[in-house]
Length: 140
Length: 407
Ligand SMILES: Cc1ncc(COP(=O)(O)O)c(C=O)c1O
Image 1 (cartoon, rainbow over the protein chains, first blue to last red):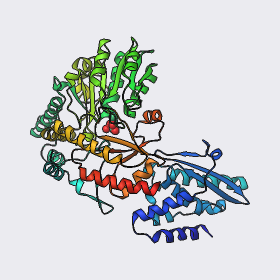
Image 2: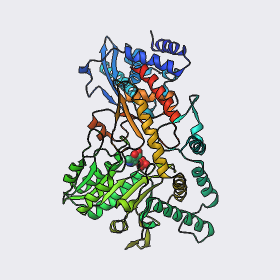
Image 3: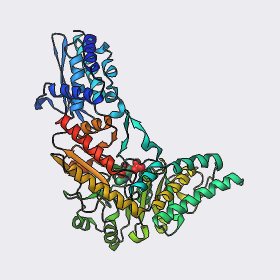
């Protein structure tokens, strides 16, 4: 699926719920279903320090596509990590660089990515794009 | 205070009837900042509409009025802290600026390489960093009073830290994370035996306890207006006259001078020496209104009621499994920090928010004490006299629901 198809799928999933608590329950489920990142990958280089919670991000390039894995110590944050990875992982550097992540806005989770929340997620998204840029320039 | 009185008080705070996400707001983040009673906001409007002119400078009617209001506010603040003279009250932007002022000016006058400053392990960053900057500037050393597992200062260790190199001690009256009320009178007495002055960070104390700087014999005492139901951007530095006279100005500019020539400037007398530039006379006027409001209710009434709230909340929270209250000092203010095993504070805070409950999560600008407890942060509920037991019940129910979702 393309990045946008994946995003639309997620929007669809969240749109079943009106109540905030139900949306967050879904996000918690997503966080809990995130494939755990082994401790050896929770390195200082992979750590994105937020004021409130910590986020780890690892990226590997295989056959021209980038595969992300990540983790966080807060489960709601982990849920968003899941969303970002689910949408962006397995795509080419160009696709990731050009991606417009509208789904976070659409499902009402924008506040988690706002710079004032300082939970490391905005930095994570920037880091994902940085990886894409780095892998792209290595390719060329 | 009974239910009716509390209802009466709540009516003075319009924000308490706000809805967030269509739910009644429960505001339990009072240690971060307090809400403002109508009279304080009205005072700000009044000041701008009826006595706005630059102070101390004009010969005209309005300027006189504004000057009088600012100086009357100084007197109110002096009386509030039981200072001997109103000249011992300096208006600043808040606790942070007050501490920076002392760290700079006291440092310039009295500190030399090899000297030491003592703070405690439970300080807010704003009572750590200014002293670290002083230490860096002067080649000095920062010494730290340790805290036990209940969140109380180790007074034996404190005594042994004091020595002939110690220039000043700076500790919080009340911890913003643990709620501990520190034995500041004793801290001051012990330091004074060695002629060492003490600064007390009263940011979390003045809204909850009545403070008498003369009884404490504090050399400096500081607090922020916004944490005591007053406006943001105004705060107080109390300093004993002998210290304020002995230390140089912090900032230069208008108001703080007596005469200026390019060869030499002489400084104005206290308190103006420390108030460079046009001061926040609107803020000071409104802060005085807040202090009067508090005095009318009575700090003893406030303390008794808030204690009731704290104990009630502690009881309620203990019904939740795997609950840990961080900060179990014998002497506590209405600050309740806690953790639930296996659940990150951020998750609890985010979900409580969606249920209309405002609490703070994280390290509360006091990272060293978090490191000492070996925790990333806490959830903190902090109560004011406009909070109610009903709110605590709703909070506990919400917390149970949230913990269930997260575990
Ligand atoms: C104990 C303590 N000291 C200092 C401060 C800093 O106050 P302000 O930010 O108003 O200068 C705070 C505020 O959180 C505090 O709780």
